[in-house]
Amino acid sequence: MNVLVIGSGAREHALVRALSLDPSVDAVHAAPGNPGIAQLARCEPLPGGVTDADAVLDLARRVEAGLVVVGPEAPLVEGVADVLRGAGIPCFGPSSAAARLEGSKSFAKEVMSAADVPTGMAHVCTTDEQVREALDALGAPHVVKDDGLAGGKGVVVTGDRESALEHARGCLARSGGRVVVEEFLDGPEVSLFCVCDGRTVLPLAPAQDFKRVGAGDSGPNTGGMGAYSPLDWAPDGLAADVTERIARPVLEEMARRGTPFVGVLYVGLALTARGPRVIEFNVRFGDPETQVVLDRLRTPLGGLLLAAATGTLAEVPPLRWADEHAVTVVVAADGYPAAPRTGDPVTGLEHAPDASEEAYVLHAGTALDADGRLVSAGGRVLSVVGRGRTLAQARARAYAAVAAVDLPGSHHRPDIAERAERGEVTLPG
Ligand code: AMP
Ligand code: GLY
Image 1 (spheres, rainbow, N blue to C red):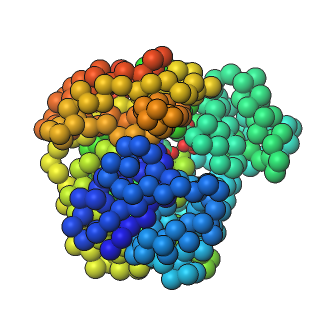
Image 2 (cartoon, protein in one colour; image 1 turned 90 degrees about the vertical axis):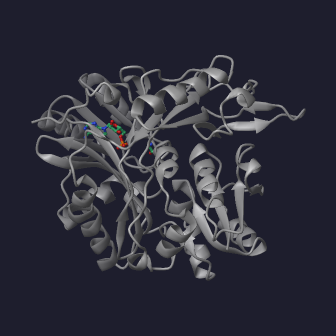
């Protein structure tokens, strides 16, 4: 089977890496990919971007793809999976209608309410006045979310009412301006990727993401600055519990509506004193959590995603996992997330302990310049993965590899998985 992966980040590099280790996969193609992905897969340009469904379909036919895996949310929301499936090409990723679970936070709330899924109280607002009322009704800390896609940057959590109002005004000012004001959910956050074929749910291993740009969870939200898995502090049976109480009811509700969900239902949770509560749904693999989850998955990925894409997930044997820990640290460009600088040379990758597989560098925002040198081309530039028998060993290996690479002005969080290593992550109540 030939597999085509759509996207160009470290998540897609991790997908390509895992797919290329699957003996049932003959060739991996990626579009548009990046210079790191190009070492494992044939990269194809998509001049119209990843949302150009006709171009993706042409490409899938040309490379004789038996499976297309769509990485980012935008092409899913735009209906790329519908076009592929319509042409008879198995696609791992939801239809445009099902992708609304991520594309619209108010739609996700409506589905959760219909499926009786535990989440925070929320008010959907379209005016300044409604926002004020909602802020007063729910109290501080305030959580204000842009209704639509915002690349992980549409959410503000703040104790300051004025900042909350200001963010809400910005969201309302955009076309179709709608904003969700939500109850603050207190407790450690978990990302759980549930692989779905429309009926059956298979959860992967839980991971934790670090969304804030700075050490100690300071500064603004980003797409994600690092992750680790497994979560030794999480309650036993968490994945099974979330599958039964959240993922399966949502899948049933989506099927009932005639819009079955195929792909990854990414459940973002807060483990509160009252139990797990949904913070958000995404309809794709998370970045950077995918880097650590796939590092540990021993079940061949291509077969698993093909089963989901073709409705045969119930026949897949129990997933196998490496009894190891994985940590990823994102190396971000100068100025990320506000105004990332691009075009800086990325060097030292040959010094990162790649061949040993104890640590390796996945590319995100990288490109080759006119002279063929590797340069930065985005906010999150690299995602460095370390693996070990213990979390401490995995962290040490990841940070040693980070130290080997050089990108002028770059920054990374020094404390990814640090509190977990110290046993300081605790559940409330
Ligand atoms: P989202 O885009 O919905 O994932 O939100 C981004 C981040 O904002 C989450 O990962 C949380 O850290 C934080 N956040 C979102 N909603 C809430 C909430 N209701 N309570 C506490 N923190 C939240
Ligand atoms: N890691 C957060 C996301 O992928 O949205």
